[in-house]
Image 1 (cartoon, helix red, strand yellow):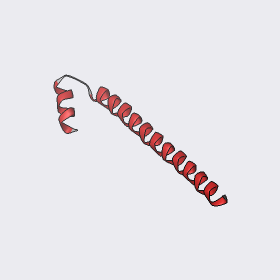
Image 2 (image 1 turned 90 degrees about the vertical axis):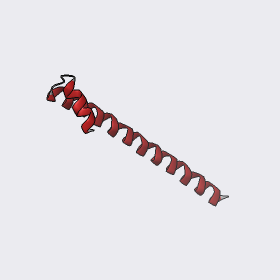
Image 3 (image 1 turned 30 degrees about the vertical axis):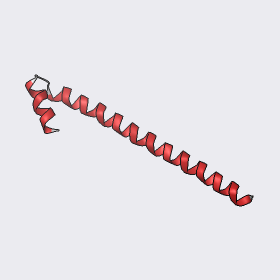
Image 4 (image 1 turned 120 degrees about the vertical axis):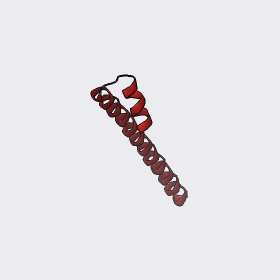
Length: 57
């Protein structure tokens, strides 16, 4: 990460611009994690339904 900060500074980006980019990257990353968590919950629920269905038969 430090490498990228150095390159950004060399290119003339301000601290505010770098901070804005960091904010966007963190938001995208958090969204991806939330989506993965939701998907895992859905899969677990489907697996539980299948298990209950199989126990009932």
